[in-house]
Amino acid sequence: MKNYKINLMLLFLCSAALLSSCKKYINETPINAATSDNFWTTEQAAQTGLAGAYSLLRTALLNRSSYFTFGDATAGEFTGFNGDIAYTYGGLTGQYNFNYTPYGEQWHDWTPFYQMIAQCNLIIAKVPGIPSSAFTDEPVAARKKLLGEAYFLRAFAYYYITEVWGQPVLITQAYQDPTKATPVPRSTDAQAFEQVVSDLKQSAGMLQYGYTNPTEVAVRANKGSAFALLAKTYMWQKQYQLAAAAADSVIKNGGYNLEPGSTYANIWKGSNQESIFELYMQYDGSNNEASEGAFNNFLQEPFVKGVQSSWTVNTDLINNLYDTTSASKDIRVKADFYGLHNGAPLLIKYANVVYQNATGVTSAYVSNNLVIMRLADIYLTRAEAAAKLSDVATGNTYLNLVRQRAGLDIYTAADPTDLLYTVMDERGRELYGEGSWYFDLYRTGLIVDGNYDNVVDGYSTPRYLGGGCQWPLSMSVLLPQDPLLTQNTWWATH
Image 1 (cartoon, rainbow, N blue to C red):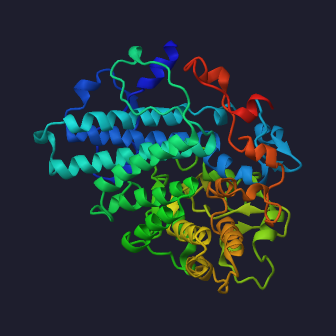
Image 2 (tube, rainbow, N blue to C red):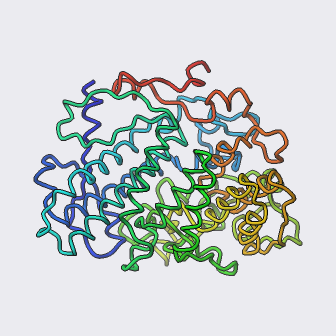
Image 3 (cartoon, rainbow, N blue to C red):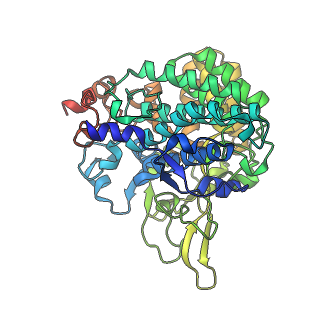
């Protein structure tokens, strides 16, 4: 009980004064604050606290490569994992479908996300009480921006927890005295998504489209980020008309544009015209976020000097999704993959490698941002919503915007089912290795649809219906923190 109450507090605040550079803003180091009331007195303190929330989100998503493990490895996008025993132990006929393994406890512990949620709860509770005289910017607008970003980040955390583990413990209160906190049972997924929608509506009402500060582009949430995540949340709720409207808002008002096919690789280099929300990960000579637990997993020689092993892509899946012949028009085949025909295939969309010692070509860093939502994703979300609404013409329009950028011919779906299957294939092609395709397959039920060509091996209908497509929780770690916690139904008996 004591550990549970202490973990609810977790006041992660940044140690240094906020500098004007967005890079520095994102990379501030969070620390524990012993006196929260004394801290929340100025705009600078609130900005520093918000920087801590962004930093905590990055930590949570990159913990043991979680973002790519949850959203890509589970969909069979990779078949080799650099000798990692946890992936090997969880394998089934060449597919990693997260059978429970004692070697991957980080993937069964949602605590890092609750650390971020606790930080957001503090921001939401404390910022309204900061005196107007303590703001260097116009106080009403500054408060709205701080709160809007905090609501977005909390919404994203609960959205992601619900995708991965399901049934989160919903905590929206900032605990001044954690010793007085009481245990909270798990919610339903429906309740969780309702909370996400509520937070995103709050966020969208407080934020603006676009950015006045170019260093903030995509790496800080804005109204476009809120509506994009709202569209994706509505898809989980099967509220397809609302999803279409939210996606339309992003498409028509956000000011985003698809990156041209000729410069497709620029998407992951940071603050791109297509990016809606991303986390700062670029190498700057003073930090190593660019090398730890992220993009370096995918690369080896000849892209990183001296590295001989990495995650390897599933060539069977790639051959099913793409035309990989020499006559292929799809720019993504060459832009995203290397060695498809030599037995050591690699994902190279993140191959922006720099060396700390350029002369000696040592200390390699993969310098990209972690792109979480971008315009192509929202185009395909809009197309999927249209398929569910039997609006095949609109669906074809948005599907083909993505296909044409990739160099493919226009496709005309014959009916809503054909459109849905084609959109999901296109999501697999466009978002390969971007931490999302597994959740799309699970959300739509196509993961066990025998009529869908790219159904994932290892997932049965009973498992899908029984909640076995969400991850188990580590009860040995989490139950002492919350005695009301229960294991996911499927994993309680398997």
